[in-house]
Amino acid sequence: MSTRCNIKVTDGEDTLWFYRHSDGYPEGAMPLLKTFMEYVKSGAIRDNLSQACGWLIYLGAKEYGLHEPDIKIGFNGWKVGAIEPTIGQHGDIEYLYTIDLQKKTIETKSV
Image (cartoon, rainbow, N blue to C red; front, side):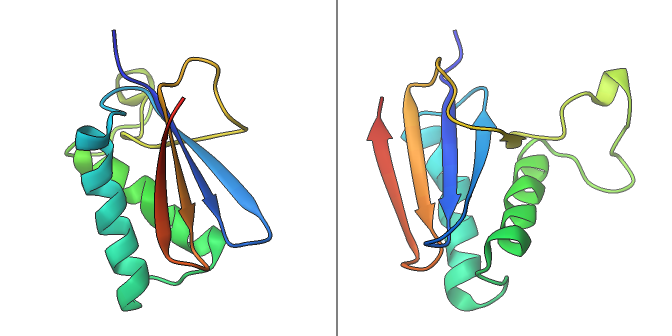
C-alpha cells in the first residue's frame, strides 16, 4: 500500500492543501519539499501563498518526469504529478507536512 500524506501550506493567514498519494514518508516527500523551500528562501520564487504553491505542483510534475511537450491531457495523463491540490486533510494519510511561508519552515508530523 502507498504511503499517503498531506502538505499544508500557510502564509500565516491563509492555507492551501495538497495530497501526495505515494512516497509520502519523509525520505520520499522531503527532497521535493526541501527544494521548494530552498527556492522560497533564496527568492527564486515568491513567498506568497498562491504564487508559491503553483511551483509546488510544478515540482511534483517534474518528479514524475513530466515536461513540456510531454504533458498529456486526458485519461492517460490523468495525474499531473506527485503533488495534487485538495480541499483539506485526508483520512488515510500517514504524514502531514506543514510549510510556513512566513517563517520559512517545514514541519513533519506522523499522523
